[in-house]
Image (cartoon, rainbow, N blue to C red):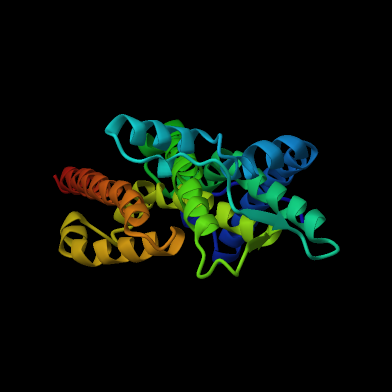
Length: 278
C-alpha cells in the first residue's frame, strides 16, 4: 500500500493514524534489522568482549571494587581470581539462536535514537510549533538517558548479578553449569531494563502533556512509587540488599526529576491557556 500524504491531525481518521503508525513502525524495524545485521557480522566483538566481558575477573567493575576494598582496608574477598562456573549450550541450535537474539538486542540498542525519532514524528503533528522545534533536544535527551541506563546496567547491575549468582551455592556437591540462554538472558534483562527505566523522565513528560499526571499526583503517590521501584529493583538484581539499593537510588532520583519536569510542563500549559483566554 502506498504511503498516505501527510494530513493535518484534525483531518486524519482513526485508520489514517493507524496507517501512519504502521509506517513509523516499519521504518523503526528496518533500522533495528540493519543494526542487528552489523552486530551479527561482528560476532567476535559482541560475544567475547561485550557479552562475556562480565564473566572475566579482569572486568573494570571487579577491578574497581577490588581497589576500593583494598583502599578501605577490607579483606581480599572482593578481589576475584576466578568464577566457579562454566557456560554451556545443550541444544543443537542453541549457539546460533543466541547469536540471532543477541544481534537483535544489539540492533535495538544501537537503533534506539532512530526509534525515538520515529516515535516523535508520529506524535509531533499533535504538538505546538515550538515543541516540534525541540525535537532534536528530545531525541538527544531520550537517547542519552537510555544509553546511560544501558551502561549502568552493564557495568553495575550485570557484574553484581553474575558475581552473586555465579558464586552462590546451596551445597559444595552442586556445581554451577549455566546454560548459554540463561546467562545471556541475565545480561539482556539487566541492560534493557535499566535502559528503559532511565527514560522515566521522558515518559512523565508525555503523560503530563496528555494531562494524565501532574506534580500533586506524583507527590501524593511517591510512597507507592518507592514500593514499586524497590520491587522492580528486586526483580532485575540479585537477591541482596546492596544491589537493590544501587538500582533504587538512581531510579528514585529520576522520579524526583520527573516531578520537576511535570511541574514545568503543567505550568507552561496553564500559562498558554491563560494567554488564549486573555
